[in-house]
Image (cartoon, rainbow, N blue to C red):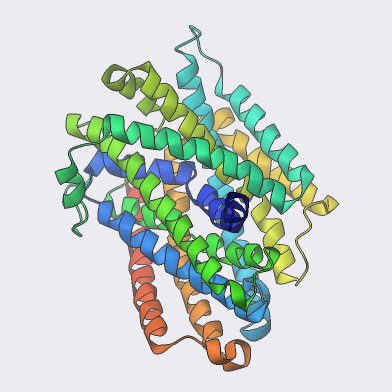
Amino acid sequence: MNIGERLKSLLPGIFLFGYTIGTGSVTAMAKAGADYGMTLLWTVLLSCIITFFLIHMYGKFTVVTGETALSAFRRYIHPAVGVFFIIALGVNISGSIIGVMGIIADVCYEWSKNYTEQGIAPIYFAGVFITLVYLLFLDGRTRVFQKVLTLIVAVMAICFLINFFVLAPPSVEIARGLIPAIPSTGHGEGPFLVIASMVGTTVFSGLFILRTTLVREAHWTLKDLKTQRNDALFSASLMFVVSVSIMAAAAGTLHVRGIRLENVSEMIGLLEPLAGLLAVTIFTIGLVAAGVSSQFPNVALVPWLLDDYNRRAPHMRRFSYRILVFFLSLLGLIVPVFHARPVAVMIASQAFGALILPVTVACLIFIGNKKSLMGEYSFSGLTNLFLSLILLFALAMSYMGITGLLSTLRML
């Protein structure tokens, strides 16, 4: 297989990686690193292992059956299950759209102060990026999304890896973070909500639902099972490396000085005296790339879900979809216009995502064990054991998310 074919085979995984590592991940990982150092690194590792397994199993389901997730839920479980995912994920990504654009705009505003006295108002940055994403959506082709995301993802990964080597804490501290522990001290939203948001932004239900559409569009068949697995492994591995880079950069600079993180834009002002303008610029470029790479799939997710549910080939150029996505895109103006706290929005949004996860895992267990669908490829006892453990983990994360959200609401 030549380089071009290899890259083409990894496009679905790159797409999912670009979707996952957005400003939601940057927010969750940076806040975890600033508030708790590398203590919660085990959460990242466990989340990425679970993400790989679920990406792989959902992809395998589509390779074997030719069915996408929501259409299978509708046909073989109940139509209400498909409707639940459309509504729940629609609410989830609406919060993400608000937070993503708010964070990008705030970070760019803080960064622009290095070059202009007053800085460029966040509303202008938000307007530019919203327009860029919407114009790309109007093209309507998934392959175009994938190719553009490949470039943006490469920029993002390089930027965060550079920051890791410049700002990371000692390797001993990083290794110690792989030992599961929950910090006893409370900061801001509290460790439970931060953990739930870290899981919610990595083990994201929309990721697995969308995976089935990408696999079908790649025209993978049973002979591509190994390619599908390798693509899933590549995606999850990138998620882990970049997530660790972000967490370590915050832990190695802010946590060691006892500086908590309330807004990601604060990192611009805090990092400059510690690491210099170049490191700040690299971080800003990486963050913007992360935000834009996740915003493309964010605005397109509901149309994809609707086509999946209705057993139609994805067609982004429908007039109704263009109107829907236009109004979804305008949500990105909420933080710049009303001066809401983007980090609080993102943390709550990602924690809400953890609440959807148990249903996602339970549905996979049901359809994956349906002999009339999977035949000889029905899930094995070992696979079902892993999925059952993941389901228990998902329920625990849901509990943490609810506990953390209630705790945060009591502090308001």
